[in-house]
Image (cartoon, rainbow, N blue to C red; front, side):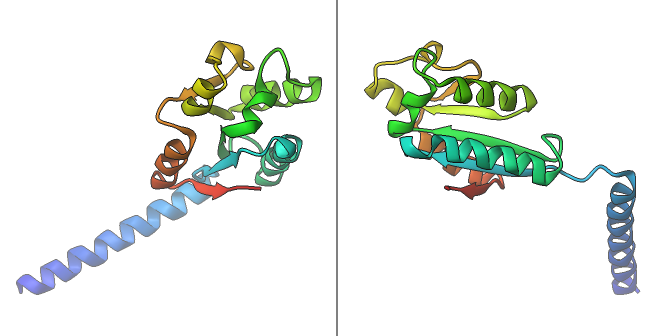
Length: 147
């Protein structure tokens, strides 16, 4: 009899989980997907920002996808407040207001002798390094994209 009770409890649990998923889907509140974009090539800044814009549009907006941009190496120079192009400044500002998380590699910042205050608004330092931050995000279930 004990096995029967365990089996019945197991089946009831599965049913409850399935009902919760159906209820959530019917309520229109799917979990946001999570993506980390890795950018180190200076010549790909515009391309990656374009991809992020396309990603938001294709996913249904910032409420439907959580995106983190991790920048290190030569690409970080493009995000300096005193050197960013008007297009870069506009895109980064728009995306950050929509929820884009901006991470700058702490090691690259040290090498370039800059601080977060030298970068466009919204950046935070990945103190342990950009690649460490990317690995942390992947461990949290973020999909990794390196365009």
